Each structure stands twice: as C-alpha cells, then as structure tokens.
Image (cartoon, rainbow over the protein chains, first blue to last red):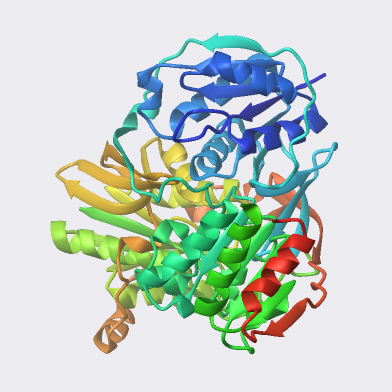
Length: 319
Length: 259
C-alpha cells in the first residue's frame, strides 16, 4: 500500500486534533495508507485519535526553531517525508498556511497542485466547487504526485482504527525558513465560538443589521445554536464586525450544514462564499432580496423581531 | 526602494463566471475584465510604501492583450511603469507555470519588495505569492493586514484564524496583502491622462528565457476532466412574518433536526 501524507491541523487554543484532520484522513485512506505530519507538542496524545481514523504513523516535528517560521518548515518536512516514504499523495487543509505550503511543495518537487478540493476519489480525481459554488469541476494532477488542499466540512470523518506509531522528526529550520520569523502571536478574534470555515452552523448578518450593536442579536442566536458568526462585506466594510468574519468572494468560503443569513441581500459577492451550505435560512425585510432564491426556508420580516424570537424558542427547547 | 506589484485581470467581481466549453479554461470573453479587486489593495500599498520611503513602483501583469487595460489602471492610480507579459502560449497556464513566468520577469531587476493581492477573485488559489517567493528564494511575508518597512527590515501582520502573527523578514521580500490593509485610491483624471504616457514593456515568454512548451495548458501539471453548472436549488418555502416568523424558523429547524 502506498503512503499518503496528511498535514495535521490543530486547534489554535488547546493544540488538539482538529476535525479537519480527521476529514483529511478519511479522504487519504481512499488513496493509500495515511501518515500524519504533526507540528509541535502533544504528538503522542494525538496519536490515539489519529490512529482511530486510520493513520499508521504520526511524524512529530518539535522545537521552537521550527515553530518560529511561517509555512517554509512545513514545506521542508513534507518534502523530506515525500522522498523518505515514497509518498504518492499529500493532503493538506485549505488554510492560508496549508495552501501556501502546498504551492511551494509543488514547485519544489515538481508536482501539480489542486486547491480547495471538496472530494477526492479512489483514483485521485478531485472535485472542486468553483466560482462561488456555481460550477462543479473534476480535476486530476497529471505530473508528479497528487498535492491537494481540502476544504473543511467536505466529508464526514469515518473511523478506521489502526495502530499509530509516533516518529520524532529531528530537524532544524532551513535557510529558506529563516528568511521570515514570527516574533509575536496576537489573539484578536472573538473567542469561544467555533472557527468560521469549520463550523457546522453559521449565523451571519449584513447591511440589515444596521450597526455594530445590532450584531448582538446575531451573536445571541449563534450562541444558542453553538454556531460561528459571519458577516457580509457590507457589514465588515462598515466596521460593524471584524474583517476576518467576512463570508464571500473576498472573504471566507463556508459550507456548513446550516447557514442562517440575516439582513443580507445576497449579491454574488456574498453567495460566492456560502452557496454550498447544505441548508440555508434567510431573514430579510425585503421580499425581493436575491438570497431568498437560495433559501430552503425564508422569512420576510424585521430581523430584530424574528431573530430574538427564534433565539428564545431555541433556548426554551434546549432547556 | 524598488517595488514591483503583480496584478491580474479577472472577470468583473459582480459577473457570473463560467468555464469555456471548448477547453475548460476561464471564459474571459463572457465578462468585462477588471483589475482583480485584491490587487487594488496591493497597488495602493505599493504606492504608499513608495511615497513613505521613496522609490518607484512597477506594475507586472501576465495576461492576454486586453490585460493591458489592467496595467494602465494600476498606472493611473500612480504606479510609474509597467511590464505586461503577453504570449499566446500562456493560455491555460496553471499556477506552477504562472509562478515560473512571474519569477522570470521579476528576477534580477533589483526589486526590494514584490507585492501581490492575497488571491484572485477567479481562481482563488492564494498560492502564487508563496510560489514566487519559493522560486526567487526570498522571504515570504503574506496575508498582510499591515506592512511596515524600516531600512531593510520588513515587518507584517499576517492574518490568522485567531488574530494575527507579527512576522519579520528583510528585503528582498514577497508580500501579499488582504483587503483590510488600506483604502485603494481612485485614479484621478490627471492620473488617467498621465498613465497614457507611462512606459509599459511588453514581453514574451521567449524574452524571459523560457520555453513556450513549458507554459500553457498542454504543459499544465493538473487538468480539468469535466465540469458542470451546479444544478439549481429547488425553491424553498418563504413566508411573511406575521409575528410568528422566529417560531416558524424554529419549527423548520426542529423538523430538520437542527434543534
């Protein structure tokens, strides 16, 4: 069986295995035997979870020297392991780090790269959802090994228990890695909610929210559902909600089980970031809002009436 | 300081984008071509850095003939000169070839900073800046929401899921910017007039010392097998709020087993 390398993604707050890693392992098993690359501590703790999802080994890269540099150490380690293990494919998460590492690795080892796959078949055919989800494309890598970045929520993780060996990778930062150094990490997000691109439920607000204080009702609904909060570009441009929560063509692409859009008209700019959501609920005063076309369920009404009522109902049902 | 800013002509952000039935490449004729929105922020950042530290800004673009409009747009915002890489052999190039072409056009010209937008609104891969840094063997300072330069030190704030990382490197460096970094200026009438007289070098693949056979669709290392429009979603239920809108959503979500 050939080896497929998977780059683990870790929770930024507690360092545990993220669900996206289990999604990658589920896809990787279709192509061969997955082995995981893990940066930082807690590698042996992670091994049991990774093994449960079919990883036969976890290669643990420790040391501040490696953690202090963005992207390039990932490329260095992946390149070395591709050679050492004769890997036939590499799967990484479609995060900024993941995509950049995939791109550099492709240049380095002379392989094609496919980004933002939402599915990968046994024969390595990737499915991509492009142009904001309006077109579905099937692609293959035709040169070198298959390098894929995979979007969160693309596949449901399926366990396939095996024994996962822990292998320490002894390495230091390369000259290429040393050209950039992380000197400080700043936590500036709104903590306590799931990460936007990975959340099963996203509640978002747009122009109709009317101001920063209006997002309170959006956040309350999100918290009642354990959801992430998103915002349209109109809302982030106006400074009502932080930029990193923007859903849309120039922001994040999300594909949750449930997307609840409040006061968002639904220009292509926004639809491009959310139209692959499984179930879409729309609340808008304007019955003509184009987003109603995507709605599985829509309410024409004032979000400041509808949303708090919905939140109360959810809270009372869960109590 | 010598600054290059790499820009791409893309279909209008607000237009429906399609692939061409003939060769599965982006149908560029189907929509107006515009300067990729995120590249406007890159141009603005390059101009601000040149204004603050002195220096020249060169616009670099790879694209078909009509991408010359995009180079002019960046010049009308205030860039000093342009390089337009145009060659029929480039049609259908993948990111690997595109990064090789850009790297060849940028190498050896003494650029201290090479600025990109963090992604194009059509391909949305976000890999070209990293690939160019890899090829040129220089610092990659990407996804910047803030850039500061002091002598040869370059410090950026790299946007992350949890906030940002402060990342340091030195010139020469590749930078990519996210949209919250600045407010791109509109070209003034004077700027538009001046842009017509600014020098633009039109270069071919051969001029860059590359073989035509290494670029374009035939040389791409990934290929589209097939594509199809996503089937339209069946119409859902839309009701008007009569004081019970929230409850009706709750009932729907219960039915769908979300609550």
